[in-house]
Image 1 (cartoon, rainbow, N blue to C red):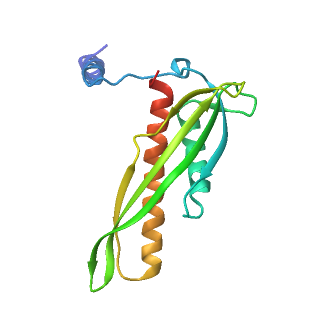
Image 2 (image 1 turned 90 degrees about the horizontal axis):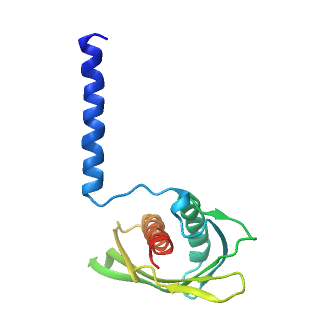
Length: 171
């Protein structure tokens, strides 16, 4: 081995050592599927208790993908069953210019319920409710609707991420 190859190996080793020290000092840990409290889950129902149409469809789609991304196998024969309720949704005006709203706040409250195979409630939790997001927009209606949809998607992703954290780590 020549000197350039030795330096390259030393640099890679040094980088890996520093990276692992930083990762461990920040409290992060790499989890595998084996670290999950359970691996199979039946994602049964999303109930929209608000007047905002379509929230249940967005929640189902994003929650389904978030659960899969975090290592859960979703199957109807699983011994754990997850239901979600969207309890509250509010679109709040924050600021106006010339009688037109230009800044909004969206507040959403969600409850998740985990059951065992016999239908007994194991855990009921609210993913850090209420979740809040903000968006600004111009005066035209298509722009308001588009920005609102993007903000709702972002808010639901945050809710689902927190829900999965509580499923995995809260005892």
